[in-house]
Length: 286
Picture (cartoon, rainbow, N blue to C red):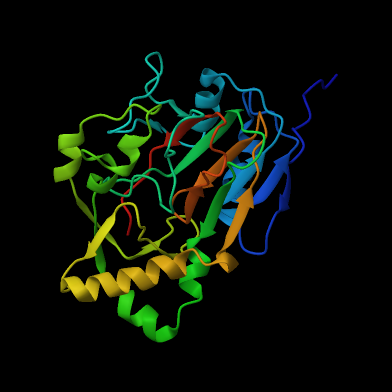
């Protein structure tokens, strides 16, 4: 008698906007996923750029196990992780904090030679209102540029640095409940990446500059660089390229760091917000 198990049903993926984002149901992230489900989620991530899951119960170990199905996990060079699991960052905003970690549009760790492929963020405790995260599709932003502007920026190189965020007095160092480190190293560090990045899976082009870490365009005078970056950074996060996610306890967001920017809203002063993040190591942008 053939008693082989039937394959798991395909995840249900429902888009949340016309440009990016999808809610995934029918998947329990706390258990080991079969290869077919992982492949389906990888394809959905490339297509929708950010995936949302509800009603999950994840320990740090389970969150790490899920994320590691998509690649090796990374550790942050300037933010301390959990003592038992340095790959896991506790992102906490206390009621009396004046700034939050992740506020402002950015793409994670573009100051690394090999920025993270993506992140998996889990909601442990959320405020009674506010605290949403916004995401912006950088493929759509690039596609919407004029052909002339595309010709101008294709082939340009930008310099990225962690100094403004993680150097002494940097914005992220002011988030008291997130432990930053090595501020002196952050000030001196920099790396170069293309202004227009090609996605290694889809082959689509995307804008790859952000306000948190991009400091200048190589080979341009300061005024020229500032003007072009100002335009690109504003264009990249226009409302037509975005979606917004309202968190609940047990919610998970998984985003493709190669194709999106994100922004953690801080509109809940007086309340606590506790998230847990792990990141997946990436490759060199081209």
